[in-house]
Image (cartoon, rainbow, N blue to C red; front, side, top):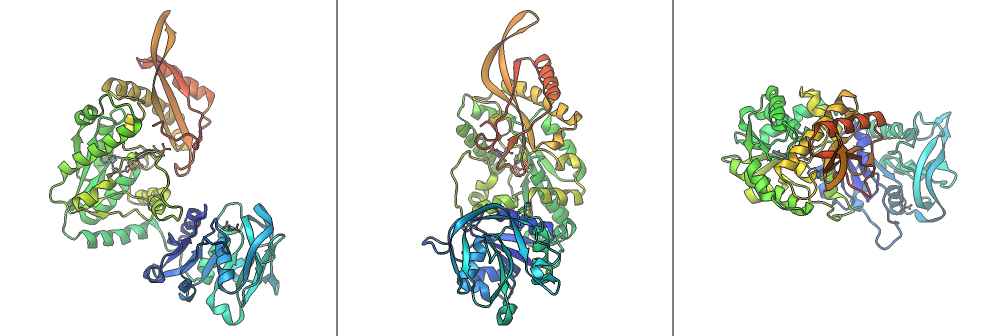
Length: 514
Ligand SMILES: Nc1ncnc2c1ncn2[C@@H]1O[C@H](COP(=O)(O)OP(=O)(O)OP(=O)(O)O)[C@@H](O)[C@H]1O
Ligand SMILES: O=c1[nH]c(=O)c2[nH+]cn([C@@H]3O[C@H](COP(=O)(O)O)[C@@H](O)[C@H]3O)c2[nH]1
Ligand SMILES: NC(=O)CC[C@H](N)C(=O)O
Ligand SMILES: [Mg+2]
């Protein structure tokens, strides 16, 4: 199976390029813009795409690829900054444009004999495209011709022609990967299928078959351990590995006392039909003991992370491999040219584990996006209830009971959260939001219940819409729904006399409160 390599020059849209290619049914991977030619060759790419990027090709700190890519012998498509890289490499010139162009523009497709001159524009009329640039090609590179133009960029689409035609190098000033470019997907399809001759053969079924083979090769006869949370990623990873090596896989589910109401039991019940061997470890006491009187969010997160590792280590006997449900967005973050960003919160992670214990990793989902993981899960026969679950953070309710955590406060939160989730499901709203949960505030307020003064806790409800958890907006849940949930919680949960709804987006807030 050939893949498409996307060289990342730091565009905000790089992930989107990979995403669109996957939607066409072709495998794609993102690699840093400066990956050496030998490394690129190892991927055996069927086509290469150069992404956009914030720098200017003529600037001192411009990003340049290994020039050897132009000798790979596969079609190359440069988008925006990628086009500008191509233009300068082949002897053209790029300069700051008098007029910057952000947003919608209309392209004029060059015609020949009543059809588009370029195969890239097959079945694409003059139409709206999305632009985001301040530089433009001001002198054509040699051996190229213009295939489309826009009001502001006469050389909006160019490609090799004549004696250079066989090189199949294409450049676009606009962004075909964004939804606002009406025929963007058609253009990418033309490039990948008609020009590069790739086959759209990515399917969950093919993926599963391929991974099963790979996992068998990697694991051999060794035993393998997997931390399972009942969440989407670890469940799909575990079922896939178990399909490959059956009884060699041992799963560990840690009840850290920070799970939702009856979650340990529920998770064990839903995992049962999947035929996995799951060891439930009751570690509530140790987690709560270590968290006692700790109020700082970062301290809590670190204690939980460490305790997870500690419990996990006790469960490892002769295993040589560790299964992780790492997804593609996790991988991309570590290769992006943007480099490491500031730590906003320390995500609990089993990631520290392998080095310390010399466990080797099996990460069958590391090339997938979340919705693709769900599609693979569906193909594996995993129930929709598991696949459509909202993400749940490893530190669980410890980051939703603000301030210091104890069993009493956790129980109050569990009771309230159960009502909220129950109502979301029965009102058919659960699937329409990315994530919803309750937060117990370290604040008391005065109320009056049955003529009596109360002085009790405040609970916040949170629901967000998001596509990847990186940015989010608060969900505009119907007022009568919120009012019903609030009534039920105040009436049914002892210890809460006031409910608030969180109307902050991310950024500047985050999804979780701690
Ligand atoms: N209670 C737990 N017991 C054992 N392992 C856990 C537990 N919670 C988290 N993990 C491990 O940490 C990893 C990361 O957790 P994370 O919440 O990101 O993924 P997930 O739970 O598999 O899926 P989702 O994002 O849908 O919640 C899991 O894949 C799992 O291996
Ligand atoms: O596995 C996890 N371990 C963690 O430590 C963690 N912290 C936050 N989250 C989840 O990540 C998404 C983004 O959350 P934030 O906006 O709060 O950073 C949201 O979906 C959060 O629920 C975590 N997931
Ligand atoms: N989006 C881009 O790739 C921008 C490329 C370049 N920095 C410009 O402004 O033209
Ligand atoms: Mg989880």
